[in-house]
Amino acid sequence: MKKIISVCRGDGVGPEVVNEGVKILEIISDYTEFDFEFKEAPAGGEVWKKFGNNLPEQSFETIRNSDALLFGALGLPDLPLGVAESAIMKIRQGLDLYVNLRPIKLYDILREKCPLKDEFIGSGIDITFVRENTEGLYKNIGSIDEDSAQNLMLYTRKGCERIIKYAFEFAKKKGHSKVTSVDKANLLKPSQLWRKIFHEIGENYPKIQKEDIYVDAYCQWLIRAPYKFQTVVTGNMFGDIISDEGAFLIGSLGMASSGNINPRNVSMYEPIHGSAPDIAGKGIANPIGTILSVKLMLQESFNSLEIGNEVDKAVEEALKEGRTVDIKSEKLKTLSTEEMGDLIAEQLKNRLKK
Ligand code: NAI
Ligand code: MG
Image (cartoon, rainbow, N blue to C red; front, side, top):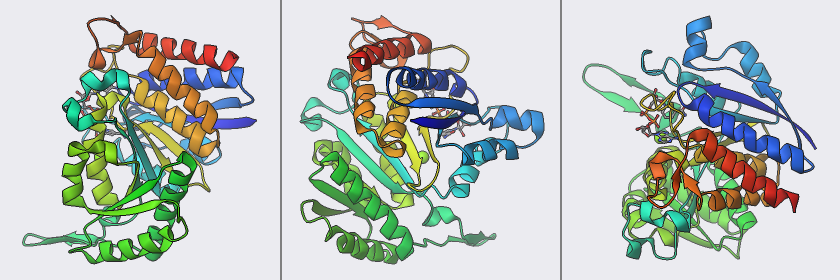
């Protein structure tokens, strides 16, 4: 199965971690029915310095004509904030990537790296946030003057329906027994429409339990009893906040993966961290967030739950042997970005050979 993967390495640690993601894709290409071809699509700060444009037309064309995009991170400390980063919004909007999928899973072997006490971790953390990625406050319709400022929190029926439907389908595919909706329907009108649509759509999934939680309460439930949640669907603003809170629970920012998805379009897969200028060039960044983004690509864009799960198991096995410095363990070897990637690649190769 031939697939073209566009690759945007980006700035800072971006190219370092993307190298390891590509390594994993190459193994999959070698050992399964997939046949991947990679096409570079440069964007970000370094590109802006060369061409005065953070997303050259050529790059966007390459992305648009590919089957999926693997993305590093953008941003350089010597450029004003946004100069590099705005390319991300151009891609998200240009491709109408309305799903922001952000899974957080705490591997058992990393329980000691979780900031929560063991009793709160309970049976474990394995949550997927499904965040609406195009509407709400982030549409940035508003105004500002000296005395007041406003933003319109616009939710449309179409926007709510498509994200909520995606969440239920995702839960069904994963065998989840519950979908939790996070809103602020006790106060905000957009949330009232959201909640109505959540239950309308939920009726089509009789086997899945529906749960509503207000966002402020959810913030405490997420650290008090994270084991209660499976698929969590929410709007743009609330999703931004709770998914970052969640990302901290799995041991390191470097472990968290994400997808910016439109099921009918090219989707973009990226670690949630930024270009990490404080560690860039040192070869110590954790590549697992990127490698787990490859897992998402396999599962969401290429419909291969199975190979995605193999990637996940390869990561879990590798974590028993060595770690990058952000999740280091006294008992194990401390590895560079490349060595961590090699270890996971080796594990994956052995699993796929069978
Ligand atoms: P950051 O995520 O780059 O770094 C925050 C902290 O986490 C740093 O201490 C960093 O060393 C650490 N860290 C990040 N990734 C890591 C990894 N893979 N392994 C180990 N440690 C890791 O966030 P920060 O410092 O706020 O932003 C730096 C630049 O990145 C800024 O220009 C920002 O705008 C941009 N950014 C870009 C994003 C994107 O491209 N999607 C997302 C977030 C930030
Ligand atoms: Mg954020």
